[in-house]
Image (cartoon, helix red, strand yellow):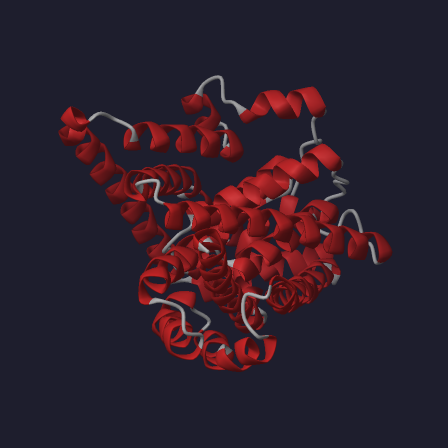
Amino acid sequence: MGQMWVRALQMTLIPLIFAMITHGVASAVAGGQGSRLIGTTLGLFLAAMVVTVILSTILVESALHAWPIPAHALDGLLGADAPAPVPGLAAQLMAIIPENPVGAAAQGQIFPLVVFGLALGIALARMPREGDVEQGAIMRALAELAAAMMQIVDWVLMIAPAGIFLLALGLGLSSGLGVARVLGVFIALCFATSLMMAALCYVVVQVTGAAPLGKFAAAIIPAQAMGAGSCSSLATTPVMIEVATERLGIPEDVVGLTIPMAVSLFRLGTVAHAVAAVLVAAHAVGVQPGPVQLVLAGLAVILGSISGAGLPGAAVIYAIYGPGLHVLGAPMAIMPLYVAVIALADPVITATSVTGDLTAVTLVHRLLRKRTS
């Protein structure tokens, strides 16, 4: 019964991710207009996410090699199905571009589907003006498909306590303390990666001279407290806007664009801990990813984070973890367990994301002043 509940969640994964990333990319590209402010903001977000993935990967891999997880800790979760072996370099690179997107979806190949969704979203945004009717219809269909999948997820999550209990009961009987150890390592690394990136934000502000460090640290405390208390960057948005304009003195036009974009696209704590989620699951089934696999998994986490804009917590977890887990051949069935325990680290993860958002708007303001001076 626990496995049936997991399958009910998994059946929404492919259409949800495809509709979400295609619609999100099309909307972002269509609304971008290529202005200097938007270009600077998006460039900063991308660079920061790449750095986050690199540093988090180094930290997590170092920790997992120093304190390794047993290679068969998730055997009870996999049942009779062994994890798929990680393919070689040529196969990995070829698999990035789906030969048949419909076939990739049918086989549950999430990462190639994400690539196809990105290409389709950009193409929809670049359609000529005379195609507005068709573009609008497709965009509405994608939005409605994503909303319908989320409705199904809501129905399934209504019995989440019972589903997670049954799933954990079966895992406990078959795997003993192995699963508990995996989840404990996951939570510990969530704290470690999030706190590392939060600390790095202060270092960046100091090194770049974007703002006096003492003033910046004191100014963002209310937003950090709101983020930790609400566990929602979206709910913290009004506080972040007030902090940026009133306490940090950043112009309203910069804040009005950068903060909403940061809340939607740039979630520092989410990207950092997602790396831990993907790598912990891979190590727990005996997968030792090489450099190419680590790069592809990091790219998948970034794309998933961008595609997860505006979704509630559980859906964000599925959107962000799914592509990376697929790249490394890790079991998708671990995600409900991640959903069950992520609340323990969520206050720190959200506070880190809020810190990253306010750091980003401060840096964007600094870069724009430097270019105009």
